[in-house]
Image (cartoon, rainbow, N blue to C red; front, top):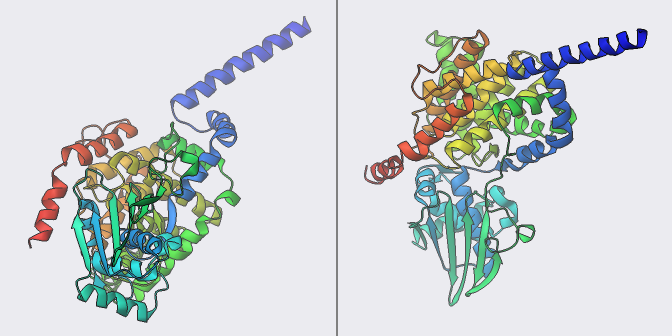
Length: 472
């Protein structure tokens, strides 16, 4: 009898536990259900998420599009083996738009021509997106001379690829070319005098020198799974994110203490002294992030840590979280976990809207990431983040990308303001819902709608924007 009562008691406990666990899962409460998810994540997926984080974070000198053009030319020049007499670079409309007005570090010049010339003269493709780093004044002078002598030509390629860069270097009867596809360092092919030296398009995946496709998310990646990962990963496994904070805070300080571009960040701090803008944490966060973009877009010679192929996305995804965490003296482990969350949400959003898009990635995707990171810092959960994302989409989904330039700091300031406001509302259970435009009650569908807006609804917008930029 006693044994039967014991078995009956165990059975009742198991039934109650299973029902409670199911309730937690259905209502996205990461208590009992989260423990099982944590175990599953640790055993099956943590390394995949860590790998994605590491692949999508990389240091870059200067704006990413000019750096990618310089990298393509560096590959071609390296294959050529001698200094080219002339350079021809064919790029997609998106690359052309994003590179035509942005400052190139240490040159006082803007645009893709000087970037291409610097890539040829350095001829160091092993530096990847830091290819514009550590170039001597003599080399810069030679690059400027090459541009002045009209030996560099930039063309818009006839291609449907959003990210396409083909560089051809010529020296006498010698010619070499390099092609980048789909990611800013996605080496697809190198040729010399008609001979194919590298072919990552045709080669088996294991033999490719660079991945020509953007890093892929885990198949089941959602906002919920990202939150699950953040609750599962150990602090030691994300210590590499310290470098993101260090590098991006350095350029923010540069922008706050020197005059770059429109001085958006610096002017916010100065306005707070006059009383026009409040002297509070929120505006200080906006100022720091905008100041970093001020410096980067105006040719500052300090690198940034990019996210999902964009330095400005890296700044917007990291600085609000880092600055708030440090100002509030929060534990480092909390800041690092919040940063991992912000970056992964940025990557996830970019998977919907595209590597390059007519929508402004730093204003939308990275600010959505920051919103979630800020909510995490203040102990908000998944439901709060869903509300925050919906408010962000309701607020700034129409911000378009009209190329990289000093004015990007204005859009970043607007986006970080939105992220802070949306996070604050979400922490109080307030935010946009299904009555607000393209927002739905399913956050993944909201993000999908955002992607459809940029990729289908605004299909002709990029050409129209480029046409206006070319004829003003």
